[in-house]
Image: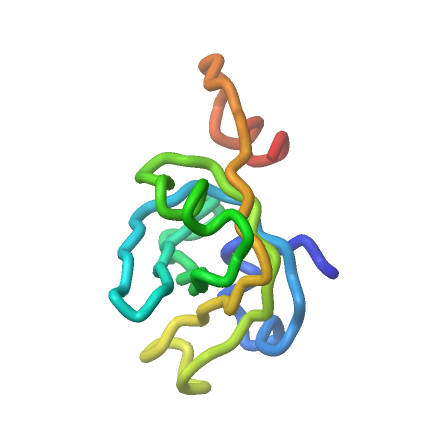
Length: 117
């Protein structure tokens, strides 16, 4: 499994790969169908990657549904797209797990924070 930045995960070459992303939650939307959409970003680009977290995840109720904007997370999953025109449909990840990570903001510059997670 490769560790990618959000910028790398948004490239066509990442489609189909099982990867690990680390970043911050921009938004979380819960579906009545039993899954959540998470938009995450790590500061490597302006765009986000959408994460699909299904209710079958062991920590879905206890942790995933409690995530909010600004939470730092580590996500493992497969990068996919709905349309190969990445300008029209940015990539998303069908995740195998989502783990909140603890990071104390001690006033470090964003570059240092990105390297630490």
